[in-house]
Image (cartoon, one colour):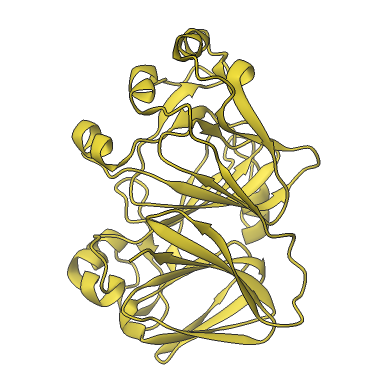
Length: 312
């Protein structure tokens, strides 16, 4: 099989900025921000459409239902990891994601653990990851007046090349001035605890059902992208459900599929990705899926690529 490209599913959230549109040559207006792009997803409501090959024009979920074994390989899932680009012109809502059991029981959804790779950040940009108190009563009081982020959100400074792990149950919010790629597990349930007075629906009771004040983020400082002199692969994040390595490709790097799919996301320059059946070009921020049945693939640089794999 050739690498699979998907047509992204764009969303225009109130907090969205212009970075995705600028990177991809799209129109952007304050009313049509395109601030969030589901680039690899089969989740209902945000799934992509296959953009190349024999299934071009088909919804990704439909293709997976018909050809899941050939595409996903030896994994116990019905869909791959999700990849989402986000440009935060303003702080996102303060939120928390449920783990698998709660999500299935309460929402009929999968749980969600995610990791953010920072593409760019303005000087002094921070995000919220964790609570500064374990006093649940104080947190509930602050949630009631929409001040929980200001009063008790743990601020973490980030810059280009940082990878931040956000486990299920961790209070978090991507911060203003941060352009990031999110690699997450199969769910898409989000419980808002605070929305900075914007008036959108909150989910405070369920959020406190799943909140774990003891959790802390894991931050891996990988450094900004520069044209590499040699090929290099480093661990970006191990999220339990999935593992992401960061490839700095000077010329060509080759990999075996080993019975599993891979999702590749270009986060520095542009990349050419090839399997024995064909090749695709990935621009900055763009992703493709390597089907398990492709057997092997190559990435040509110079570029930086995130390689996301389902954990065995």
